Length: 249
Ligand code: FES
Image (cartoon, rainbow, N blue to C red; front, side, top):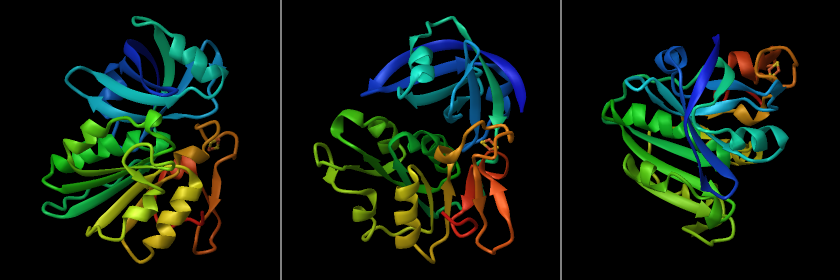
């Protein structure tokens, strides 16, 4: 993890309250892996939440992040112009395992702003010859993003809570008929609880990025008990990705 300056290459709103930003930085684009995050500082104001990396382009030395405008820090970040720089620590955390499972089928389940890190993961897995099924949940149709990008990786099911786009309900409502070897999921904790309960016994990994505070191991906001009763893990240092049975949600 380094302290770096990232140049904003592009910034645009791609769904309601949701901004996609492409940032140029040699070190982070070279070393980042799927599931890792960057810890951005905006005008000396540390964002409350570290932001996951949605895509990496090593040739163009860029990473892509997506964030939801939910407070003053993200509002300020959204106002940055192309060509300006933001400070960031990164790449941070331990990302997804990328073992070789050529021919296997992997299920990706994302909820809201938990969707972005799964895109980078899905791309990396698809490049290894792995079949991808994606289930992406959003509040309403206005919040849906990256549908086309996930469809390019494989079967993609969109679910909205109010049924204004795709299937109506929750991501857990559409899992019954899907056949897969392993799952990866990222999203709000209640969604992760529902998924790990429904898919109990299946091989799975969860990303707990929503639970992070400082992102650098200093605030203890992110500790989570491990399931064997043997202490705690720090999400920002030991995660954000864990085996689904490793930690107690
Ligand atoms: Fe502060 Fe992990 S988020 S210690």
